[in-house]
Length: 462
Image 1 (cartoon, rainbow, N blue to C red):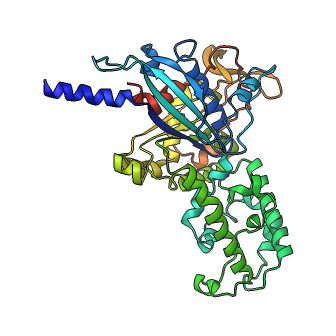
Image 2: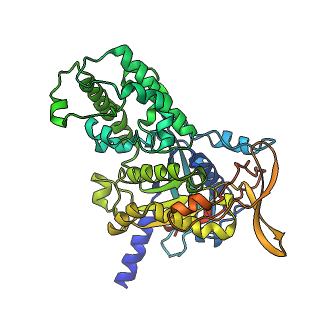
């Protein structure tokens, strides 16, 4: 009787306390973070009513009773704009929620019935879920913590690819002539920094992902501050030792000092205050958007993601690591916009995502960190259809473009591995940008949001 009693008492202690879980929703710009969070809150709020969460056992078994929003603990951080997002989706015509432009958070309390009822167990248990959203542009800066100014300059893809080089052509024309040993000119620094920032903005608009510093794209309260008046030097012919011996008023020393300030006073506090305390994480990746944009942008996304993944601290949790060295102990990697290809291509989307992140995934599995790759659409924008073509049924998608045109399309085949040169030469992969299908009073329609929710928090709802 002693062992069952101890087990029951342990379960009582665990279930009796208000469990807490901190979830980071991570992804580069335009990966769909705002849509994912809006859908996540919507699905949990509708659990047990209209939500379709068959892949989440607690919901399928009727044990998940729903969720309510609570006052957030940090009154200095804006609340995630769930209500404006839902208002946009319910508009006529429906609109996508506005993308994130700053840090926001939201606290939910989930109520559920434990799967096993014991004589000491409570009938109802609670899980407090803290959700955090950040601009994808700011996430791009986390890899800067692994560099000094010299290595950061060397790592920048300033001359890689004709398309990227063309977007920075005006800045490169002047930056390539700079003498790092010359005395710094403040007016020139301000002018060249703005030209570099304009190149980053053009590159983002063109679909590139590996863009640093990220705050140049979304400066927030730092707009116009000298800390944002620096840039990488494209031609460094001198040794690192010789450059670091230059006087403090030299161009190189001035740029290096501003890089260090940005690194220590902007990037490091952001990482320390927000990323080191997460329990779970989902990384959203717009694989299809990069595939749509062509080989140079696809390779650029691969490099950006590889750098970003090395910025997080993964590992198994224990009481000691929770107190002294918190780590992310469970990870999901999701290819978004799964509804932009036909259902028969969803398996290929996951395979392509795993190929894109092959090296980080190897490291995670070696560290014994549970990781799951999946494809999803947090808010559906299309419906699957079939059309007759040459006497055969073929899959297609029906949706409404952002311009309001109703279309029936087959976007093309998704390669199950990293695209080869032949793929880029022959493939006709192309899809338009669709409006969301909208929302009434019911839960939002989705693809595999229930699978993502189960992986991220399902083990806490037992």
